[in-house]
Length: 375
Image (cartoon, rainbow, N blue to C red):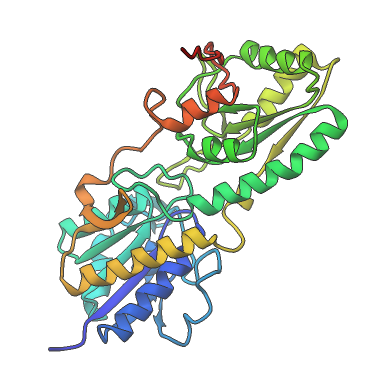
């Protein structure tokens, strides 16, 4: 049998663990199965422009711990709706046929795609038109359904937790209120996990609309107990009761044009109008620090498990599937069952929501911590 040739690409926003997957997938495919690998640069853009590099044992050595992607990434390129210039005018076209032909010309047997919902939606669409595809779930937001955890999430939570630890000391020293904005889009996983781990006093997530009055009430409760500082963690997609998300900007040439951001400054301004004479308020936006730096040990191991299982699926020719983690075990699901809807926090059943409430954390809603009565 002819040696299989595997192509790899990383799409969407970067996340710690991408290199760990590339490292493990490359080593497993070469050492265990004897395959040849190439990597397309800048995600689907590289697939369209046929811009790739070989993936070898030599050029993937030492990347397990590194954040980012040695293949680079792009979150603007949907080849089924791609911007091209025709007669001097920018138009959107389906150029997937160019990508398919490039794969055929290079003799690629399978395309391994690392990405979140948008990237994997295109992966599903390529599978529908005859490309052998394997998906691997990536997003620091942890909002991809059909898997318990996406790689990159744990590292992001660690970064948020460390930042909150540093902010506690300066907040307490100056009796300040510090409003910390974290990523997550329309799901509050980073804010919830990072907020609990970092001992936040108020956690605002998209799944629980808040009011400024409830936030002020929590701050005043802390003041009465002699806690003259407050740490507020707010997810970028959090919304006020009756309000909408805070939009930083709109990127028109992106498949996902809405860029959230600015809610920490918005809440800080509102609090200054209400209690500015009693406290100094400072907004802090962690931004892309949550994506950078070294990959956490947990994400390195999870990525290695994903990469190894992806190689197994390729070998068994089980295409059109995404590697996933279910109840601690590595498995796979159909791409068709993955895309199209977000995994958000179920505020009625999620254990950590109740844990936070038990700790006296406010979510900016009307529910308050109540002492349990024991018989």
